[in-house]
Each structure stands twice: as structure tokens, then as C-alpha cells.
Amino acid sequence: MRYANLLLVLALTPSLVAQIQIIRGSSPAPQPAAEAEQPAETGETEEAEAEAPRDPRERRRESVVYNSDGQRRAGGVTEQRSVNGDVRSLVQRVRSINGREVPYLTESERVVSSSDSLKVSERVLQRYDATGRGTGQGMERIEERKLPGGGTETTTTVYEADLNGRMQVSERRVIRMTESNGETRTTSTTQTAGMNGRFQTIIEEESIERRDGDDSGTIETTTKTRQGDGGLRVSSREETVMRMENGAAVTETQTFERSPATDSLELARRTVGRLEERPNGSSSETVETYGFGAGAGFNVNATRMALQSVSNSEVTVNADGTVRERITFKERSAVNSREFTEETLTQKVSRPTADGESVQTDIYEKSINGRMTATQSVIEKIER
Image (tube, rainbow, N blue to C red; front, side, top):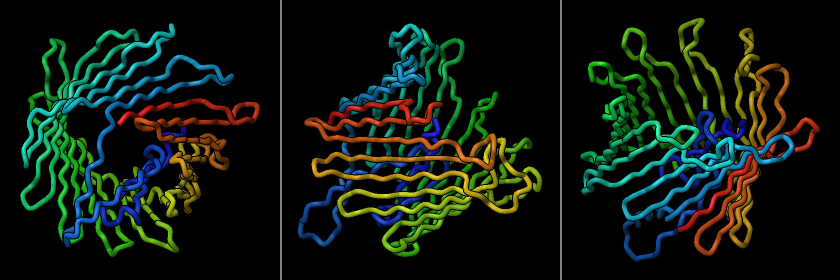
């Protein structure tokens, strides 16, 4: 669905979160941010630390897919997440061709050990085929360390079952975050295990966030990928500038990618976002992406960037706590670069309930008769 191409707004460092937000890549659609609770006044001069949000006790989600005539078709996904003490569970089910619900993926995560400096968790995954029979297991071991002098390091080691059912290491991901003098540096390394059991780095990413003031900041992200000779080489770079402008948070991102023609980093995309937030929690956001073409419509002779996609989001908050979000999205056609695709519409309604929250997201696309028709619905019930 084109809905998955909408741009995600990620929060920056805590001191900027209310003013500056980052627009990155082609991630899922922006979600309405929950209003932060204000710490109680204690009379102390030290700032009170924000309490970590409490995980929902249970979260149920059902995805329904519709045919062009509005009839439900097989393929919907039901998801259930629950928390019981230190154990988190996930069960995903799909509707098979005969209409029965069969397991698709189960996941269980538990805390193995925890101390002031190190927390170790294990996540076990079980996958199933279309008939609900188990096809293979996987496991992830997550080690979260507090670094001396501040910062964190998270190491995730991925195991996959071999033909004999034995767990073998397949991948390792390390994310290291440090802060110093108003600068946040995050490095992310992905390694795969070779035939000899030794790890080799395939992707390395470094991101540097700088605060230039109370209402401005920059982010520079460099990605290196493994080459045929075994070495790492810069494959892309992103430069993001954030500022407040007439009460709105403006974010501009330039993406540079290595050109096959010149073998050098060249400007590939430019994304501009503008977010206006109101005191009652409502907001308006526009995100525009510029480039040289899309898919088969890419113009190798283009010398100037053209608008490639536009998304508009409008969030309203009612007095009863209901939050409504309306997102429209269109992009340049991959078949004919002179035209845009039909606009898609996503409507999301969040309502508070006695024990949590209910959320329904409906995705609409224009049918052959020109009417906007629902193609997918996601219903979620959250118990706290």
C-alpha cells in the first residue's frame, strides 16, 4: 500500500522534542504524539526525570483487507501483544484461503538478568507456514549496557535454527549512543556470520545530532556498505537541518547517494516538512519530497529536481479525548513521470475507553468508478 511510503516524524533529543522533529526516509506514516505528562512540583531545584511510559498490558490488532467491491478477502492479520511481569508475548495470526485463522508468528521475550549497568533479554521466535505448521525457530539475545561516563550500547545477537534444529549465530547488530557538549553520536553496525564463524560488517551507520539552540538543530548521517573486496565504502549521506519558523517546526533533509555513472555521492532527494502544533494537541503537517524521477519514470537527463510526493496530515483533538487524524498522500507515477498517482486517504480515530484505548485506521483508494473506497482497515484495542 502507498500508505507505507508516508514519512515518519521521529522525535529529536528531549529538550527539542516539543519544538523540532525529524523527517527521515520513506518510513511509515506519522503518528499523533501522545501528550507528555507534567512532573509534579516537588520544590527541589533539580529537574524531575520524566517517568518512562508504561507498556500496555494487552494490545490486540486486526487487519482487514477488502476487494474492489468492498467484500473482505483472506489475508487479514490478527496481532495480540501482552505483558506479564518481565515477559512480553506476541502472537500473529493470518486468515488462510479457507477462512480459518492460523498462526503466522509467535514471539516471547523475557528478561534473563538485570543490574544497574547491564540488562540481558532473550526473544524466541517461531514461524509457521500457510497451514499453521511450524517452519523454523529463531532467537535474539539483547544486551543493553550503560557506558562509563554516560551513553548506552545495545548488542543484539540473532540465532537461526539449522536443519538439525541447533541454534547457529547468523547476525549481530550493535547500536552505541553517547552524548557530549550538546552533541549526540549514534553508531549502528550490522554484522553477519561467515562460514568460518567470524563476523563481517556489512552495514555501518553513524549519526551525529547537534543542538544549535533551543529551537534549531542538525543531523548528519553517513552509511557505509560492504564492497566486493570486503572493505566498507560510503554509499549514502543525509544532512538534516531543523528550525522553528513562524511557530512551525521546519525540517529539510538532503539525501546524497553514490551514482553508478560517476561513482561519486550526488544529491538524490530533498525532503521538506512543516509541522504546526496547537495548544490543544491538534496539528497540521505537510511533507514534500523532491527528486529526479520515480521508478521507471526516472529521467536520467533531468537537471532540476521535481516534486515527487506530497503528504498532508491534519490531527484534531476533541474535548472527550478522541483524536482524529486525516492523511492524504500522492506520488509521481512510476509509469508516466509527468503524472501523479491517484491520491490515497488514511483516516485514524483514537478513542479512550474505560480500560485503555481503541484505535481504528481506514485506508481508502480511488476505485475504477472514481469513488474513494476502503481497501484496508486496522482495528486496535489497547488495555492498560
